[in-house]
Amino acid sequence: MRADPIWTAAPRRKTGDSRRQSGVGMIEILVALLLVSLGLLGIGGLTAATFGYNKVAQLRLTGLNLVNDYADRARLNIYGYDLGSYAIALSDAAPTTQEMADATTAMKADEAVAVTAARNVATFDRLLFQRTVANRLPQGRVVVVTTPTNQVRNLDVWLLWQEPTTRVGDALFAAGQFNCPSDLTDDEKTIYSCMYFKVGL
Image 1: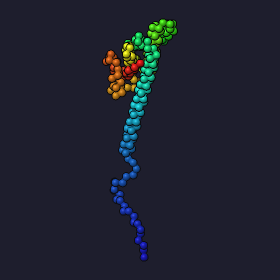
Image 2: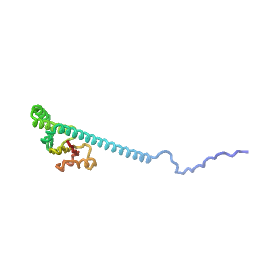
Image 3: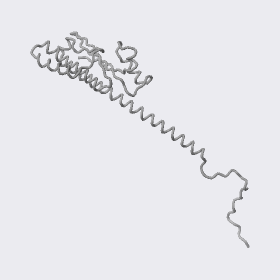
């Protein structure tokens, strides 16, 4: 007697059957490459934006430190502040090395006279602040308005700079423009980003 087989062979397909597939087709490979490329481009754009925003944050932190230093100098020389010597106009250019040296010499020469000394110290502080802003911020400029009264002593400080990675329409750039001084021209408003500080002395 013959035993029944446990399994039987699968029926053969006809030789004309075209439903068989072996390997990956060229279209699938191209679609996969396209999806990977789009993902890498998105990651690259996100990385570039992150670096740009980190630079903006670094500039803002630098500006905050500069304003705090200037306010501390004004607090130490209240008499010079009351004389109005800490105000800086937008048209005031950053001082040259020679102007800084002249201010240092004048400050040392007139230490005996209180009013002159207070003015000279304030002039040196003002020139140093302008020079530091110009050196530490790209195309940096500064505007300072003082209110020298006996009741209130405030420094209104605007820092202006050109952010290298921003473009018109950028949300951070547009937010910075709301903090600019009102006397900027339309051309200046399109290139400068600003920070505003009100410091009580």
